[in-house]
Amino acid sequence: MSVVRPFKAVRPKPELVEKVSCPPYDVVSYDEAKEYGRTPESFMHVIRAEIDLPSDVPHYGEPVYEKARENLVKMMESGILVMEEKPAYYIYWQRMGEHTQTGVVGCASVDEYQSGAIKKHELTRQDKEDDRARHVYTVGANTGPVFLTFRAEKDFDNLLKELTTKLNPLYDFTDEKGVQHKVFPVYEQENIEKIKRAFDRIPALYIADGHHRAASASRVRELMKSKNPNHTGEEEYNYFLSVIF
Image 1 (spheres, rainbow, N blue to C red):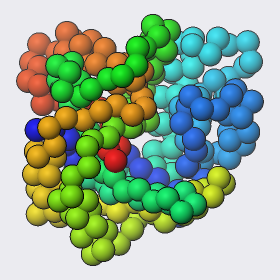
Image 2 (image 1 turned 90 degrees about the vertical axis):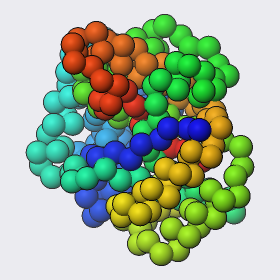
Image 3 (image 1 turned 45 degrees about the vertical axis):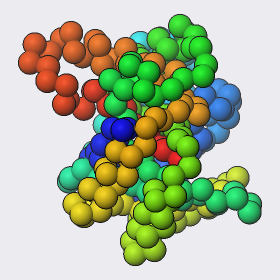
Image 4 (image 1 turned 60 degrees about the vertical axis):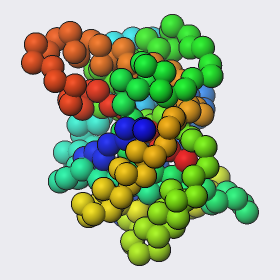
């Protein structure tokens, strides 16, 4: 059994998605991040907020995390990003050349990460963990997903095919690398329950990429838990943003 919850996403307005979209924080250099930052709507202003500060500010300094939070709030207040009214899953389809893949965006369980039910295959670096943990804690959001995978499951694949056939994509665009992206929100409770039951049949998830993001989510959960005398285990900080293929 794998626990993956729907969530209330903060997401771009459809007409702005191409401008907001950007690569993950850890695959671009500072100069490349600055280039993406030429677009005011780019999410790079949140995940690499040092691009909006003087060059002598340390990239892992507290002002960077505070600026990231400020930028996220501004993007929400200006309407670039909107928050969903209710929890949902998102089916995420990609085409890269002749290859296509379809997965689900949801929130995986920190408990399952800590227990080993979510399998790891890499060690992490303390400085990288510190950076992402401080970012998540200060910003108050998971700003990038952990990439998870699982052993092929035919019924799961068939369910995603069924849903993408009958649902309309919220986003459908091709990025500057030529990768096509489609995102199908799953709002109806009946379909949400189908996806939950599908994950119930998955014995284990594996981290394909994002070991530092997962480790930082675990650390932030422990910090938030220690500060919450009424902790129940159901709070949002007990889960982390993931895309599962």
